Image 1 (cartoon, rainbow, N blue to C red):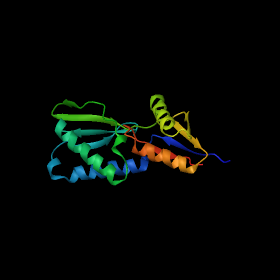
Image 2: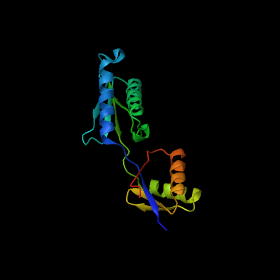
Image 3: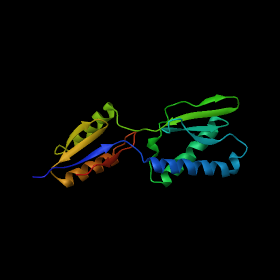
Image 4: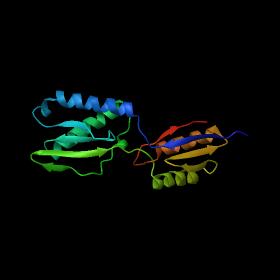
Length: 164
């Protein structure tokens, strides 16, 4: 009997992210309510996040909404944005560093494994570094696991790779 499997990972498409950030930068440059303000979206040094710049915290929220809208337009979830860092304000300028969520931590991987084991006893999850491999004898069972994970209210993005 053949075993089928797939991996659950928490990552994002870097080229799509690059396109979304460029589109957000263009929209901010062209918006009338943002003219004459320091509003911008800049890459962090390692390109693993963005820096939102504006004149105050209220305008940071506007810039963030633009970035979210561009992500949604490119079929990406805004869960990839780690909004846990605070907004800094100084010299009539505000900024917020927003790193991207990339990779499953051990706690998140354990949470996914427990969810899979509790809802689908025939599927066998195993943690493989920053991914969770799910193995089952039935393709239908694997599809049910995918549906369950997609409908779960997780605070990080997940995607499915390495189908076998």
